[in-house]
Length: 247
Image (tube, rainbow, N blue to C red):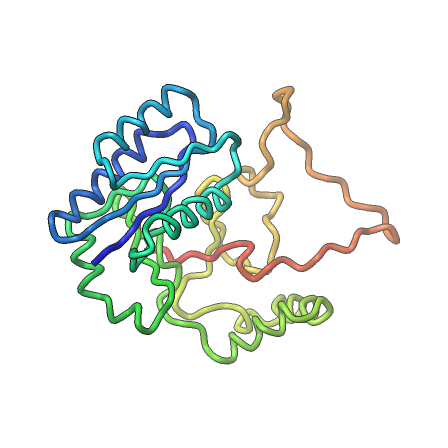
């Protein structure tokens, strides 16, 4: 098996080093690995750490040093293009953050489950935090045909999206899934119960307030527009506030 790993890096090279080393340890002498590390204009000491990593695994770690911080997803695309150009023999691509730690049997586990790739173009792993919490997958079962139809209608037309969002407020069963609890995760990592995925973050939730301004004073809740002058907001995507299955 010939897998490859792509990640971005920005001033946290020690995470990248740990991730690559853990992946290489899982490869053993059985699997041929390729790694593309895309650095988004980190400081020189951070780049030196990445250069040492590339020297530690010559011919395996391909380091791309961007002159500008292009961002996370564009950076991943840079790494994917590099792998396609230089390693066309790669069969499977692992795309993830640079703070992952791969289990010692990761490559063997992927090989045992190769039949999944015959059915699905993308497979998401079970991601577990260091304190034992399961971050992914968010849900267990695939979506039903009815829900898939609702998604198609939602993204097909703006007026339909407004109607579906309105209906979701009246019929929670129209949007809720049975394989997750009704919680959403706010920016502070706390849970907010009984909120629809179609709802916007609540300003009553102190942890969800915007960060302070440059002067250090907290930003104020935006004032409501006078009646008759309210701005029309586009409907939120279904996944704009990700619902999460909590153990």
